[in-house]
Image 1: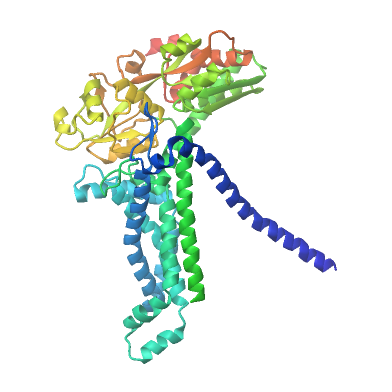
Image 2: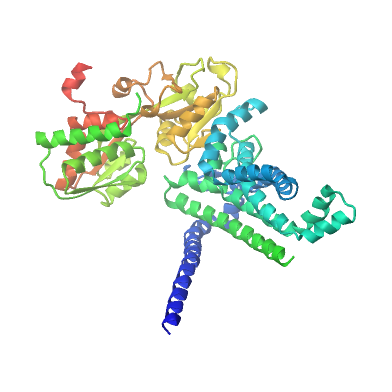
Length: 287
Length: 282
């Protein structure tokens, strides 16, 4: 009897702890919606989402966040285009082909990469990458969308590598053995058998990378120049995240409300990405 | 002028506060709260003064709400704080509405370029033309050919507000980068030979070169005598028709006293009330 009561008590504690997380999510969602809606109402949804000019402190302020939305999409897409091939092939190599010693070294390097704080990425980007881009491409200033893409690509590598490795290692040995027994070379086996079998897991890795890239603020703020231009590779650009972060400290009135609205838009993006991630993870479990 | 180590400045502030107590410059044992509200640019100055004041008057609570000059002026006019803080002079209509300004200190905004840049002097008009995109090449202002890269601060920053209003370039600057701190601006300018930026004079070190404006080098003295024009006042704003509470008045007097001059200097601004003997020594 006493045991049962204790079990119930522990069960209650677990439930409570679980509810803390749910509570946080609910709190943030409700708060963002409540504080994000007024500015959108005042500015107008269409003008807010598709306006091309952001001049929050001008005498006649304009709050169009299309440049931020496009920059976030382009920046993330660029980081995926650079980071996924590298991360994916690294994962294939590590999971299937690498000798154990090499694998241990590379895997250690990947986890160190995952643990580096984003401000350090930003700092290195600011002091090495930005001047580098300036002299390699002969542009007046290196702080640009390109710099942000390169930094983001490196930052999403660990999540892509780690999740892809897990997916590839989960492919049953029998599949590969059968393929090899039928006369396929190891390379053929990796790309024709292992990778297709792990594709949902790899898709999940990519979506995770997208999530990390679109939500990053600190590193991006230090290398992208932060001017609200429409995105172009060598121009100074501002992301959704950096738009909120850079103006928050001094903002007031409608400007501050509009920053919450930007956060709301960003939050919706993240929700979409999360839904996609869950979809792929579920499929990968079923497969 | 370089920033002192934090430890040193804290220690100095403490020592000075002790000195003040022993001198009896302040009537001890005041009780209550001093609420200040306003300019974020004044954070280091008002923070240091507040700390020193609380050190001297342990029963007094000093609060500072960093909302920006405009909000601070609004707050004091509505009676939501004791003293408003503004990093610009009051506008005529604000003075007419019954507010009083008392200049606490001056802050120079240095125009900075890469140390290798041969340009050493620009006038305000040229700076405005550079920042509005009318002049885009260093060759046009006596430098080596190269596109000028404009570095500025984010919207809402007091330094940006100060710079743009002095040069008359409000909402017209064609920034290449908008950075969120003085340190970022200085680092970025020090990395790019074609960059130009602006930053609080107190924060400028050896990594960048501060330009003379209209032939006047930015120094504490030229800011003080007004010959260096890219500067702004740090102002304490009070209501004309209403007297300050005893505690707030004590802080007000303390902040403007000659003894506070060193605290203000350590915090990076140029105090207006310099002790007479120190002035003579210089």
